[in-house]
Image 1: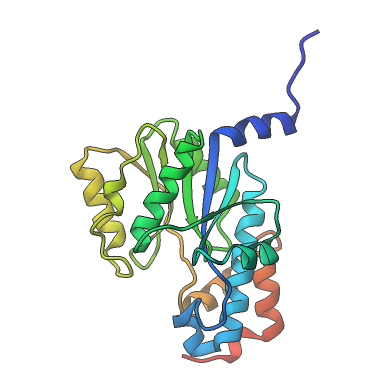
Image 2: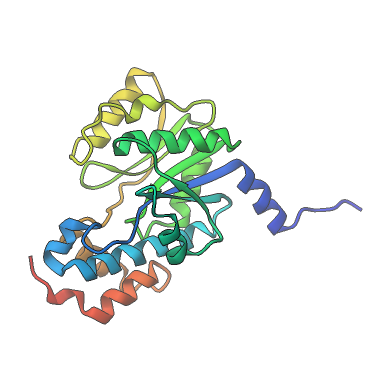
Length: 240
C-alpha cells in the first residue's frame, strides 16, 4: 500500500523550500506610522501598526512557507519576541538603508537553503492568502515577482535562489512615488521578466486607514485584529 504524505508533512516540506520575510520595526510609540500619527496620535498609530503586523502574520501561517521576522533596529529582538512570541525565526535587519537591509535579508535567506523567498511589509493587514500563494507560485515560471502599491512603492518582492539580483535595491529613491517605477527599470536593464501582482493599498496615512476600514469592516475573514480595533475606537471621528 502506497503511503500518502499528510497535509502537515507536505507543509513542512514546502516550508523548507519557501520563505516569507516580514519586515517590521520595533513597536515603539512615536517611531512607527509617523504620517498616520499626525492625525490619530502616536498611541493609536502604534496600535494599528501592531495589529496590522499580527493580521499579516496570521495569514502567512496558512501558507506553505517558513516565516522569518526581519526586525529593526538590530537590538530589538527581545522586544519582538515579547510582542510576537518565540515560534518564528527572527533576523535582525542589517544595512545603512532600507535597500541594503532588504538585499541582505534575501542573501541570508538563500544562504540557509531556501529556494523561493518573498519579502513583504507589515502594513498590509488585508493581504490575502490568494495573493501570497500567487507570489510563490509565480516564481516557478518567473525569476522575480513584485506587488505594486497605490502610492508608487511596492508591498512585496520575491526571487528564486538562482535569480536574485541585489541591483534592484541600489540607488532607488526610497520613500518616494518612484520606487516601483525605478525598480522595474532595473529589471528591464537586466532583461528580467517579472510577474506583476495586483495593486494593493498599504496603510501609511489616515486616508489609507479609512479606506481600509470601509472595504473590510463587513468582511469577517479579513484583518480582524485591525478591523475590530478600528471599530472599537471609532476611527471615523478623526478628520484630516
